[in-house]
Image 1 (tube, rainbow, N blue to C red):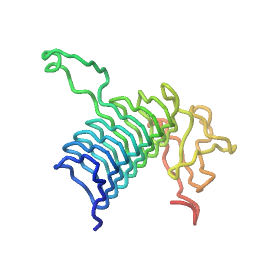
Image 2 (spheres, rainbow, N blue to C red):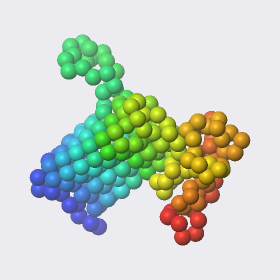
Image 3 (cartoon, rainbow, N blue to C red):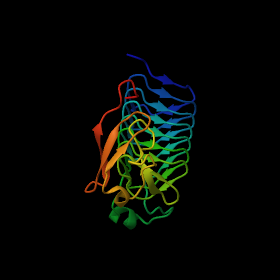
Image 4 (spheres, rainbow, N blue to C red):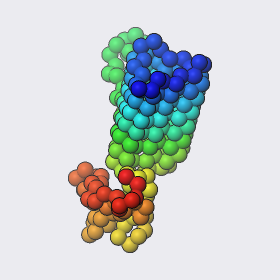
Length: 219
């Protein structure tokens, strides 16, 4: 068992559940009710707001802000300065009646092994699929399918990503296009780095892995 490494300038609530080998950087704020899995890294000046859950092996990098209600899976990377919001229609002033009657804003879910680039903003209610990659500075307003690569403001799909973090290519060796119709006759996508092969699944608008990495390639 490895004790957590918590910088003395970090502000960590007494009831935070801290897993084995957790690291919390200087001036980070970890609010009440947070759950940090084994090996989680919370960077310098980061905020992990009340009730957030972060799975094993994930990183919330320096100055990232993760607001209450978010669920972060295992091995998720939240880049420096990224913001995960929790209000879809924010107002600074609300009447008591509005607060009482209003439904809670939907939470953000980041599934296992997804990546959020530096300075990206994830709007409340969005789900980020497994192995998806959000480009630096993107503004994500809609769900991101598993393995999708998105970027821009608002973020749009540019292509597809391998589990190893490299961009997939089509049968011609070109970067796999964002639109499924462009490769409907040959749904095989492959990774030139590790050799994994995927198939596009129209109903799920996502990918399924058909073969694993080459022997000796990254797992």
